[in-house]
Image (tube, rainbow, N blue to C red; front, side, top):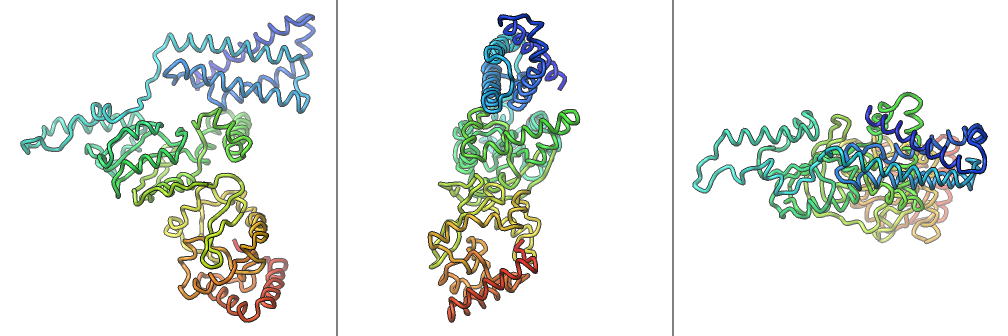
Length: 509
């Protein structure tokens, strides 16, 4: 923290001197320009510092190569240029010369790169090892087997020393609490269990298939560019039943860390910009590519639900999850091959696969109310939580804060009008169900359901059932009536549902 503050002070000094230089180049005295430009320069400086902090420009002490110093400077300053240009031309801010604005950014960038390169050249970079199998075997697993060729036991002293080395490596890379957590699920001294710290799929692809029963990655997944491809590669190297252990920093943990990291007031301002950049930009089609171009996928924000959902989509099931030292750790078991979804849902509008008429799966359009990849966690949440009144999961951690609001006022269901126009659904009818929910129903009701189109307004709002059995009875009653008198049944159910929603505050949860 102290070293970062020094970097910030030096950077502010560089920007200020660059500003003075270009102000001096203008055909007027510095004494005239400084009073006039003091306030706009202060705004400029605030933007500069926040963007630089957000993109990690001051984290150069961890640099391992010169490009690790130069790239963050170029990316951060190019982003500043884009932000300042937008504010200048769209909102009329920074009412001083474009020469001063663009000149200050250019000169500051060149000076920063120069001093950054000098700093890197005269210090020993921190080595954060990207360990491949051979290096891990040399440092962690000096022997292949518990017995030698003759069947005699290997020197126990050497085996104990190996375990001490492994423990030290895990503690240095993570913490003692993490070591104890990992030790509960695998024998860290067994050469069939591989421990590494990497963010690149290449290091995983080089491992032999089925050689290791467990893979433990001490580097959190937030810095992995293509997370699903990385998980798929892990899956391909493990046998069925193999264990994968790693961690992530979730939304609440990141918020807690940032608010503790900076002084009051400043921390909330920083968190606001961090929220916009790391949680809004990646969700919008227009800004998604910009976000990943700038960050290269490092230090992304990911929720607990998305972490587990991605793992489930890649063929794993959760054995254990725990929050340790500001990170979310998980123990996963390989149970199948990855699903390889062609069109994973990530943005604010989603298309969920639901049972339609004739048993055909249809894409139901909705506004996102859950974290990305939550659809893969239905069975896991069902196992962990019971169904509450109305047939919804209790304590469903997959639902976002905005999702709760949208569900309360049915805003999330408005896009289903497109399904209505495509004639995949009708106004009144049973809910379109996912595979998991559909399989909870009785065989008789499932056979009855697939004879009819699902609807926007379900019979739930008429009978207000509380348990799954009551929900099934309500739907069976509606379907039987609908088969006898389709038009009058739908009219009756529509107005009864409208009355219950409007006057009795009926909600589906």
